[in-house]
Image (cartoon, rainbow, N blue to C red):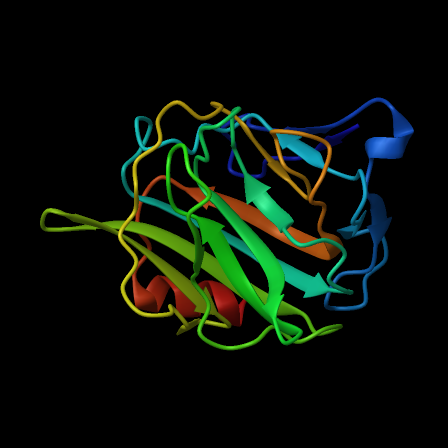
Length: 207
């Protein structure tokens, strides 16, 4: 089973042929049946044949619609391309303190440098539009998080390059092991090999 790449670049994503690893089709934010994927937080994932490493593109934007059902693990991988100890580019959600649910990322090559990127808490059972932007500003390589078209980045986050990660990535589960799964729904996952502007992000959110 595949998920279609509508950009025309042929980067269709694949679901594992073993059915226990396939997220199930569900309704999207418009209430349309079989238009989004529901991940079980245990073993569901989709494999994306797209290189998101800095060696491919130092500037990058990833957008998607997401709805969190619950916090199923300490680290809930939404996407990532970790390879062994090399952390790569990633986004997680987690309840680290006092049951407060935020977006995080591992911002290091070989250490567990967990950084909170979201400044406001995640709400359950609500669709929201997420944008992660990797942008070059002078000599700095910055990471930004937008929620529903608005910058929600928690302070200043400078990217730590990690080109030794996988040249593909997964949504819903870590590429390092079958663990740290995301529980909820994801729809309209898109990758841009450029840093989208604020206006472009707002335009996508309004569609």
